[in-house]
Image (cartoon, rainbow, N blue to C red; front, side, top):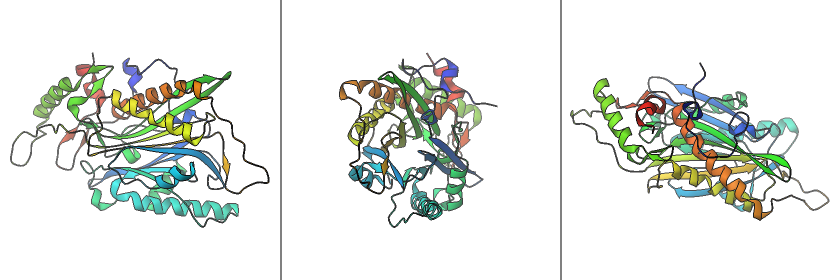
Length: 366
């Protein structure tokens, strides 16, 4: 059965038109794949974003990154900042599997380059992470190289959302988090361009949650308390009622893709506006939260080897960039809500239940 997304509940997130799927894969060439691990011990996985069908190492993508709050363990951001390009797929996973996923991506690129007859002596894999230790026994480090390669093999345009892949064990605003996506159409120069966003949501305090422009945190806390009483969950071993922690902590990985012709500098400006979408859900970006954004454009490819002529690139006129700013904010906002509403009820490692947003919408909306 197809999961309902936030728009299916009559809740909108802006006024711009979404793409055909309303996902990051509305940007032509972009694919997303998951490998999900769900056992008695582990709820985790890996999600891979492929910027295109060909070898990114041989033909780089203009890219940018932005760290809104740096409580995170991502890999590859230094070179993005310096060179303004990416040369591998982007992988998302849990915190303690970052290094293992980096290694698997390295092996993938080596094999791809050997097949294409290209020498790959230095590789900059891009890996983002969230800490899923409330639901997943993270020290088991369950994600292996095979899961990364499996996610790449499974990459498709119409991918799943919710508690899958890197979102299998995440928590958002005290509810079940996960993978979510959305897109917006930008019309410029007589053409239609797309900005797509994918998130791995694992942040926010329940009391701060905003829904459809309305403070829903208080209703959410009351609903969760009622559900915990009925289900007999939410208690510690000493029998005391577990209080909601009023701290905005965790992480959110935000991946933005577009086919707009923009420079590295312009892309970073657009990417920063995804923080507006995050804020619209209620977060204030706390000390212990990691908000890391990575973006790329499929326009303005950069060959790894220099040609005989200077590299020529088209760029958006700065006076028109507001369209892209708005699209990034709206898509990020909707992607977060999709990540939550597509996720199902899941028990944490201490027995606490993390409910899906879809369960409580009738009680907290409006």
